[in-house]
Image 1 (tube, rainbow, N blue to C red):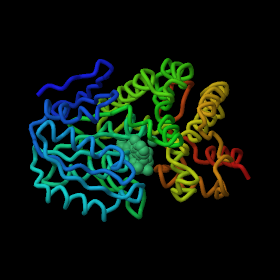
Image 2: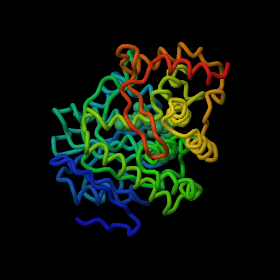
Image 3: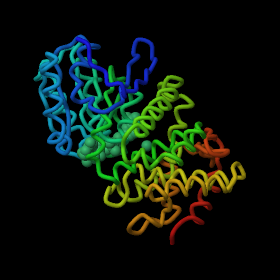
Image 4: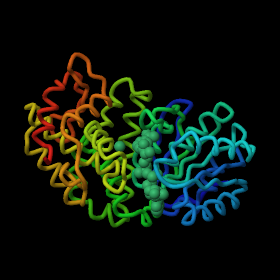
Length: 376
Ligand SMILES: NC(=O)c1ccc[n+]([C@@H]2O[C@H](COP(=O)([O-])OP(=O)(O)OC[C@H]3O[C@@H](n4cnc5c(N)ncnc54)[C@H](O)[C@@H]3O)[C@@H](O)[C@H]2O)c1
Ligand SMILES: [Zn+2]
C-alpha cells in the first residue's frame, strides 16, 4: 500500500546503519499513519500506548487509520504526567503488549508527549528482547527532541531517566496539526529546545527563529520548517555519537543549570516545566561564558531578549516561590555532573551557535556566579 504523501511533508532521515529510520513531519499525519506504517513495516499488529489527555483527542483517529490499512491494534491509556515514567506503569505496558500478542515484527506505537514516548520506547525495547517501535509524538518537545535519538526509560527514586535502554524507533510521524491543542505554556517549553539547536551550532537558524518565531507559534510552514530543522540538528548529533561518548553532550546546553532548578522546585510543573528550566539555564550558560571571558555579554543579552519575547522565563527570580540558596543549587549541579578535583564538565559557548564541551570548569566559579545571580 502506498501512502498519499502530502506535498507539505518534510522527511528527516536518521542514517544509523541497520537501525536507520525516517521522521515524517507535516499536517494530517495521524490520519495517514496506517498507510505510512503499512508501506514501511511488515507487522500487522500494534499496541498503542497513550495518555488520558491525548487519548480523547487523537486515539480514535489513529485506530481508524490503522484499521483502514489492515493493522489491528490494542490501546492502553495511562495517566498523564512525569510520574507515569515508573516501574508500575512499565509493568502495565509490558503486560498490555504481551496480551496483544505483539511479535517481534509488530510494533508498539507511542501516541503522546515525551513521557509516553520514553515509557513506550522502553517497553518496546525489552518485551521479547525488543519489538518494533513507532513514535507519534504530540507535544512540541517530543517532536523536536525526545522522539529522535533512541533514548528511552523511566525514573527512579534516585533520579530522572536513570533506568532505560537505547532503542531506536523504526518510524516517527510528527503530525504538526496536533500542536494546536497543546497548551501555550507547553508549546513555549518545547520551543526552548528548538532555540537550543540554534545556540549549539547553528547561528543562522537562531537568527531565522528571531525573525520567524511568530509564525512558528501560529502554525503553518514556518512551524514545519522549525521542527524539521530541529530533528535534523538532533539527528546529526545522534548519528555522530549515538551512545553519548562525547559530542552528544552538547544537547545538554542550558540543562545543567536547568536540571538544578527543576530539582530545586521538586519537579513541580506548576512552578517550572523542563523547557522553562532550559530557557533560564541557557541564559545562565551564556552569562557564565561571558563571565569566563569566553563570549561577549551582548550574546547573552541577545539570547535573553529572544527567549523573553516568546514568553519564556529567563531569570531565576521568575520562578514562583522561594529557591534554595546558591550552595544547595550548586550541590544539585555537582550531583548532576561528575566533579573531578573541583572541576566540572559544562556546555559553554564562545558566542551564538558556538557551544562546546568544557571539561575543566572550576566549581568555585560556578558557585560565586550562582550567588551573584540568586534572587535573594
Ligand atoms: N528520550 C529523550 O531523548 C528525551 C529528550 C527530552 C525529554 N525527554 C523526556 O520527555 C518528557 C517530557 O516530554 P513532554 O514535554 O512532551 O511532556 P509530556 O509527555 O508530559 O506532555 C506534556 C503535557 O502535554 C499533554 N499533551 C501532549 N500532547 C498534547 C496535545 N497534542 N494536545 C494536548 N495535550 C497534549 C500531555 O498529556 C501532558 O500533560 C520528560 O519525561 C523528559 O525526560 C526525553
Ligand atoms: Zn531538554
